[in-house]
Image (cartoon, rainbow, N blue to C red; front, side):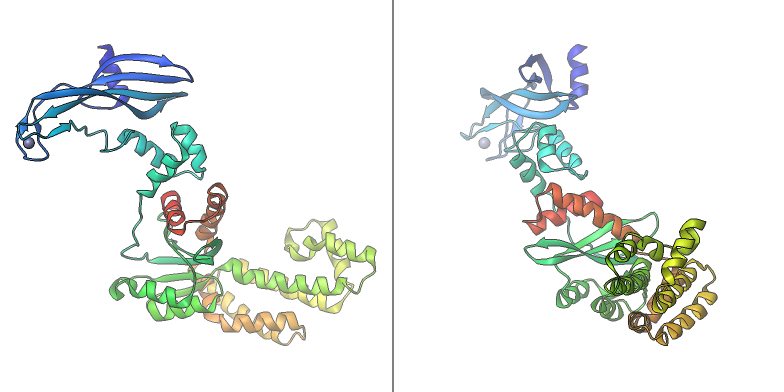
Length: 395
Ligand SMILES: [Zn+2]
């Protein structure tokens, strides 16, 4: 009975547990052997049951709690009448490996978390090289088709292939995952990549979510003719808050030191939503705005824009947004004229953000995870491995 329990614990079939002992450093040793049976000769394919000799081999297995486990397998060697001698093979032990399939699975499973190779090595009681070698056997192929909701973004990976890497994400609710990581965001490479996906599959992409980067829009128009192009909300809202902040910083330079410090430390009052401030903070904000006409105008435009963003009726948004652009254009403030010009260039794509409510939010989440992965992997010195790690963790 007892050895059977251990067999269940090991989850290894067709073995006989002979002995369990505990060694130093929390190591459990388990002696195993198998029942002899006829084997097919790898040279002549005849069956043979003639035992030649035995050898003991140490094999690493998944740890039990804090104890690492080592199997000591009595390996049997057979001899065939053709002269060939060969070891028996085991379904749970890959050829030429000193660790069980279970341990390999365990390592791969651990690597799904955003942890370092060193951490996994410690957990699995193997060397860091074993962890990397094991992971190198995993390869995520390029996806054969793309999702209906395709998000594109970049992150600074500083890989050997380029400063920025491109990330493709399935943005459909409940199906969020990283689809692929591209070595750079050069337009020629992106074209090549999307061209290799059959046109009939590309036609199925209905939404293409991106930041305000011109090459992405060109790509979307060329390769995804059926997709609505959407600019991520965060990226266009931030244009407005950047504009008012530029004005604040410019004004500060003309202020005496004390006042300059006050404006610097209180910038949140200008940048945040007025509605969210309490009475005291509102009064503070009002006082700050008294300093300069442009700042007051900028604040008015910013608040107006924030209100538009909160509006749920699309027809209202469209009218208000159009009015807002006109007002910003004639505001006489360079920073807002620039924002208005940008918004005109991206008019349709910004309105689409209100119409369809997709954002690059899922991608931002993955980008944060990638940052952690980058830190625990000591950077991306090997792009392919890093790509596989991201897909393994975020796929
Ligand atoms: Zn043979």
